[in-house]
Length: 155
Image 1 (cartoon, rainbow, N blue to C red):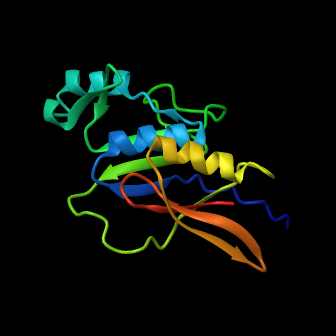
Image 2: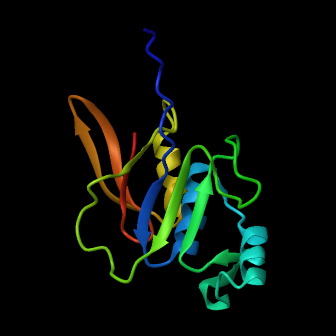
C-alpha cells in the first residue's frame, strides 16, 4: 500500500479592521504586494443582481467590495475570474468594533541583514508607529503597529 502525500491546504490571513481599503493600501505598500482587483467579478455580480450596489465602493478607480479587500504577492498565481490571489495573501475584513486588545497573531517582517532601521523608517512613512525596540539574547527587533493599531515586528 502506497501512502500519498496530502495536498497542502491553501490559506489566507484574514485581518479584522474598520477600513479595509486603507489597510490594504498600507499592507500592499509595506510588503510590496498588489491590491487585488475584483472589478470584473463585481460587475458580473451586479449585472446578475447577486450583489447590491451598496456592497461596493470605488477604490483606485475600480469597483471593490465595501467590506473586503485582499492583497497578494505579485509573483503568485491568482484567479483571473475573480481577482483573488491563490498564494501569499492577506484579506482585510470590515468589522463594526475597533481593536481592543493585543493581537494573538502577528506578522514578522524580515527586510534583510542590516536593513532593519531603514525598513522601520520606510514603514513609519507609510503610517506605522514604533511601539518599542527589543534587544534580547535571542535577537533584536522592533515592535510596530499599522495605522489601525495591529502589532507587527520588523526583524
